[in-house]
Each structure stands twice: as structure tokens, then as C-alpha cells.
Image (tube, rainbow, N blue to C red; front, top):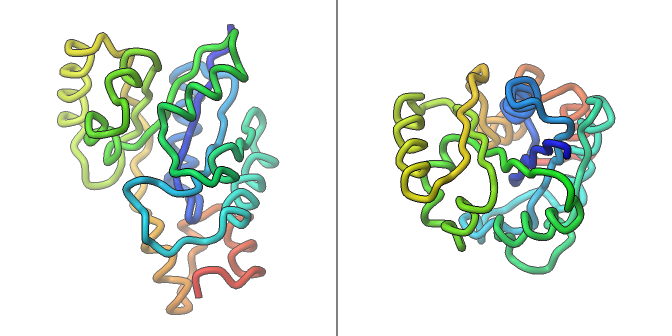
Length: 200
């Protein structure tokens, strides 16, 4: 049985913070594979302007090519429906029936997890790995982890990842104003954004 991490998100664009969490999860949790999962439409982001699904899948595919054991799933990006994590994890479990799936998320999303679609089933059926994001205290995350473990019997682990001060909003603002994004995104992503004129 392999241990597989699922890192989902808008990835609009994928940045160094995402990469830091993915690599920390591989190292600390003994994962054999990371599946990068760009979403089509997130329930909490309906109405926001985003790069196309094709561009976002293309960008994370560049990351997967440069990182051994990273692959990309476009099952959400190619769907015409709103993305719900529980449904997606069920579908991925059908694709990987002999493996254990771990859903990787940032602190910001983790602290709202009980408000998600079918959150109780998600917390009972799937393992959760939490990466610390800027602006959130590790103690707050750990406290909530213990609460969910007690309430649902959840398998949750908090990473000791390097916290990186980077956000997709900052990247888009820098692109619009002509500032460098070299310190915020991997080189492949910077080149893709430039070549395709994204976020201008």
C-alpha cells in the first residue's frame, strides 16, 4: 500500500508556498507520490476571475515534470460541476483502491473544514495533512487538530514546513504593476505567466 498525498487548490498560480508544503508532506509523512489537483470552480471562490483551467493545469504540469513523484490530476479542472473535496477524494480512491490517500491543505482552509460539503465523512474516511500558512499560529492549528481527532476520530498531521510569505493575490498584483515575481513562484511558472500574458 502506497501513501499518496493530494494537494488541491486553485493554483492561480502555483507558487513557492504550495511547493514548500508539498515537499514537506513528502518528507515528513513518508509519501510516495503527490497528486497536484487544480480545481475548476471552488465553492468559496465562485465569481472570482481566474486563469483558465487549461493554463492552471499546464502550470502545475511544468512543476510535476521537474519534481520526481509529482503527478497532475485534471479530474476537477475538466469537470463542469463545482468541485467538492469529498466527492473528488472518493473518485481518486476508486482510481487508487490499494493506496491510502492523504488530503493536504493549508491552515486557512483547515480551520474552516467543518463547514465543507460532507465534512464529517471527509474527516472520518480520509487522512488530513496540514501545512502552516502565513498569518496563522501553529498552536491554533494544533488545538483544532486535537478537537477534530476527538470529535470524529480523524487522522490529522500538522507539518513543520517553512512558512513562506507569498500569496496568489500578491503575485497577480506584481504582474499587473510590472514588478518581479521571481522570488514568489518557481522559474517555470514565471516563464509561463510571461509567455502567455497571464494576470495583466
